[in-house]
Amino acid sequence: MQSVKKSKGSVGLEVFRGRLRLRLPRSLFNGKQTYLSLGIDDTKLNRKLAEQKISQIELDILSDNFDFTLAKYKPQTHLAIVEAIAPKQDNLNRLWQEYCNFKKPNCAPGTWKHGYLAQTRYLEKCPHKLLADAQKIYAWIVENIPADSAKRLLIQLSACCNWAIKNKLITANPFDELTKEIKIKKISTEDNDINPFNKEERDAIIAAFKANRYYKHYAPYVQFLFFTGARPSEVIALQWKHISSKSISFEQAVVDSVNGLVLKEGLKTQNKRLFPVNAQLLNLIDEIKSDRPNINPNDLVFPSPEGKWIDTHNFRNRAWKAIMNSLGIEYRKPYQTRHTFVTMAYEADVSIPQIARWVGNSPEVIMKCYAGKIRKVAVPEL
Image: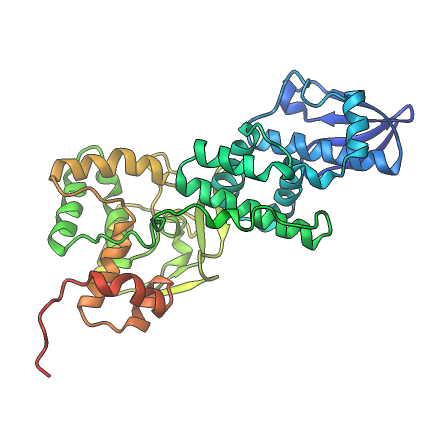
């Protein structure tokens, strides 16, 4: 038996008695080694077919759509003949898999999980598989997927086709014009959905966390969010080695991925950002230290009650919602702590370039997103 290749995943390609077979991950079958015979000879063309099968299986594993009966992956002679004749560029799913494999190495974990894998699941449900059926695919997407998700999927399908054209896999992009046909409202994201708290609301939220017997553990975390305007993903990744009495170094983030929470080097818009420590922030840091003897430089500054990374979804759905409900304040997501800091700094006449440096945005973004939200309405005497 000759081993030909082991893919980046855990599906291997082997030659056994002159024929190709796939070695499937043991983890899928409780440690038992399982093989899938492809029933084809070891030739250059057949290896390409085998690589396509590997890509299909690995994508199914990542998207939790693996067929444990293996029926989906077993060779079918009549289909193999059709595949050998039909140009592979006609098959949208195959093109999409190749496009995803191309994008994955440089794709953020969260984007891969919530973007490409989610869109893969949509395409698997679509009954139309050929590029020639682009109009039918478009109609199915519009009828079965929410408008904003449909728009994003069609944009990605168009990008996939442009990539395929560049790589000489197809000659035309049937989705190019179709992406323009869906009209939706501007998609709201955490960065542009700005509805800040006022100072009284901010202070009430902090006080409520401190007084709550179940969630007071999170009080320092909430204060830090309000006092720095940092993104929650940056704050939960902080270790004591990143903090001094003069500054805080944001240089990593905890993000959601297919495998759960993972640590990612670098930030959303930059590699690293320094934030100056003022008296208010220094008092908070000293309070945290006083409650934790024997701090190690690699310890988390804001661990969960179990000593792990704070799960922002769990925090929002339990602690944050409970506190907001108890105060009767209009519900807003924890990310509004960032918008609150920026707005309060702006109202305190801090320059826009300075605020941008503090929070890791460009001055243009600050002007575009926040200028209309400032609560100062008095006309100055000129």
